Image (cartoon, rainbow, N blue to C red; front, side, top):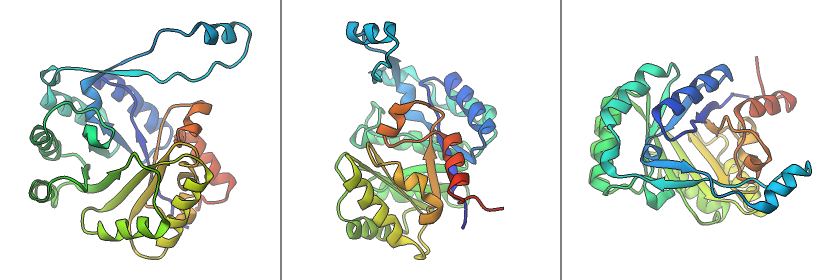
Length: 270
């Protein structure tokens, strides 16, 4: 069965941190990396230590994972052109440039028109892939698609904070978006096995359709479609260089662990 592309979403909120993670992704055998440009407008800050968690660590018990806080920064704090040039020079793998708006759980602090300018600049930088949300206003999206034509491939993305609808609705959304990009990416919140199975069922239903898609969840069960992506004929799988039990609870998967799982499941082909 065909092997999906493995894309590592780079960690960090600075160009230097992203470049360091890109080198690790390259060594781990990733096919491409995703740069979240919107994260350049935040500073990652860990919350104050919880005394109960510190006590657990002293006693040798595994402390609970603590989510970092992302502190917004002023719009003019980022030199977009300089960042794009440094990323282009410092990453050898193909890159997906993404600038996620707040309405899709992103961090970009500016107006939508300003974000469109960032996406246009990203395309013109010569990037391999650009992520364009399917809900971008139609005229602006057509303009970006024209900019990308013959230059960058397009991931047409939809991120929902809701739990997944029925498998038939997900399939319908993928099919409706088939002209919006080279790969259709759909991500929902996943709260357990029922959501995981619904996502799996949708991906299974698209097998053999000729559609190029990446269906996944964030939360419990969200990683099932990632682990079984070759069986489900997914085109692309998003992974991380993060490690730890918490990433499974978040529906994510480490890039090296994913490849090991594919080998054990005999999904890898010569």
